[in-house]
Length: 257
Image (tube, rainbow, N blue to C red; front, side):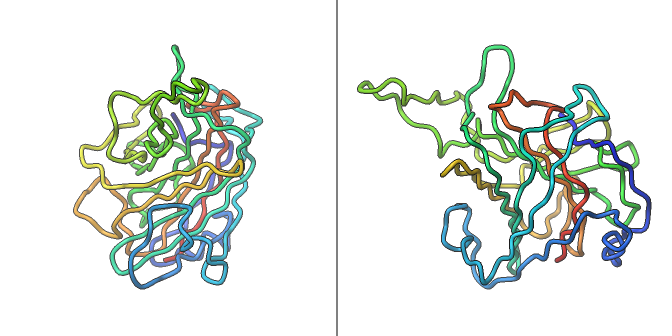
């Protein structure tokens, strides 16, 4: 897996002056994190997320991945909608995108499953990095969701209709979202401490996925949400046999806390 795109960016987007990256074009747009009282539901279909007076969904364009192999000049998912919310202790991000088919099974030789990932530079006080999987001096924190890990989609075998059977993997995960670190190509590492949770739901040919975490924790491998921060998004369509570098990717987006 690699979060890359065929564009490079300059400097100037630091934690206490993040608006600069929008003004210079280093960030595609800004997404306001709405502050709320009370809990934030994990269920993406909860009425909480449908409150149009509270949330103004932003549409993020997804483009080709043309730096690293396997290159992918024409991803099938062209855009994703984003909403973000925080309370006193947690932050949650909702991604929504159209996908005509549900892919959450593992094939014999490769994994072609619907996926989405969010990437943050671990040290936001530095220059805006290239949208790659980071480097030795620009470590990134990645949250990756996969439909194959989404236990809410699994069903028990039904003798009356075997076509409704969905295989349940032997290693059920605590969360369908994995907390990862990278410092360059081929360096993607699963963190020992898994601090991100989430849930995805596919309905009416649309994926809706919630990523959720505490604003601040003690894990040095995790991004800390004290100030506005840039983020990038990637989406894979398993139905289009997308995997690894074969995906749609965004420019940097400013997440305005």
